[in-house]
Length: 413
Image 1 (cartoon, rainbow, N blue to C red):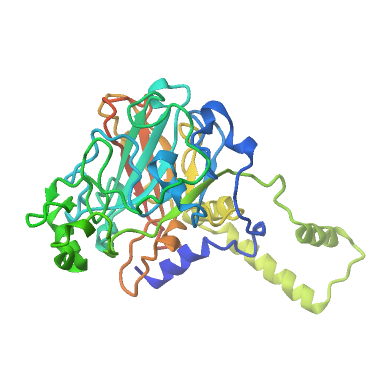
Image 2: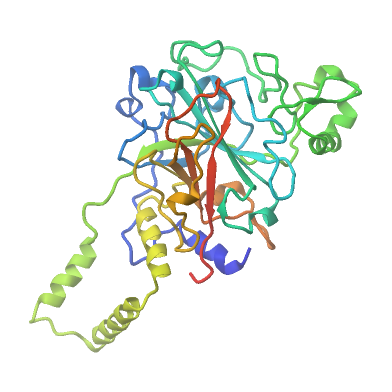
């Protein structure tokens, strides 16, 4: 991963001096009004569900350390980054073959999930989107449609179902301490001890530990299962750090707020000063004005690529820490480059025959939280756009794979 691209991506987390200053960082906790009531009250914690389809507003997601880790458990319908997936439905989970990287064939790691219900659809009162990513940097070299290193799945349930209460989850922490990792669903399905995905394979010696693949069984054996295999009472409670999962964060959702004016107080004073004929510029100010004129002349010759990248930076400068932009079937993604922007014909229809629409995009700022930088090649993207079925088809409450378009930052920026 070239150092110049690293610096370009890192710069997105800080607004350039020429742009409007970022608002002071604040601990994002939506008010009761923002959380909503009734149908919109799932979940009831600090996060809140994303808007329904067709809303023109863009909502932003921010990664924060979970103040109450118990809120990230599946019964609280979380939006989160990393850790193990908090599965929504229990039937039709994507199997090991569906979660293998299309490039290297290794198991993908859970990257993030969004709770995005559609209250006007009884069959999608609960709805989640699950994104998985390969941990091998070399698998991210290609941009465009579904590179295989990233996979996304959609799942939904009606309000009345066999898994969750009809009423919102309680706001109080559980009275009893809950194990940190779930290795079995309520339906009895076993989950991989390493990644938390479906685990059809079992240790042939203890018959207690389950895995999604031989790769993860070997990883767990080296991480301590070799010693604990004979101690069957420790198998399900002692989960070592396998150095495979991404760091876990809560995703807090806020509506995007656009500045009403693009001219700051200092800029306005400078404009007024330039309009005042009585103002005589000092030699230093004259040189400064000359520099500004030169910069303006240079700006006129900027390429289309520069304009697209600058638009991306300006749009994100007010909230430079955003990791998610959500706007289902409304405003499309903001692209970071003029290269590999998909045409409508590049987005394949859903398996049900309906068109797919843009739902959300993952921003490059998420890379800062994943701790995947290295001196050599690193996991990287400019932005990742997710397209889902416009009809939000329901194939028997199964996990339906949707479409991903990956765009890289241009080498000319």
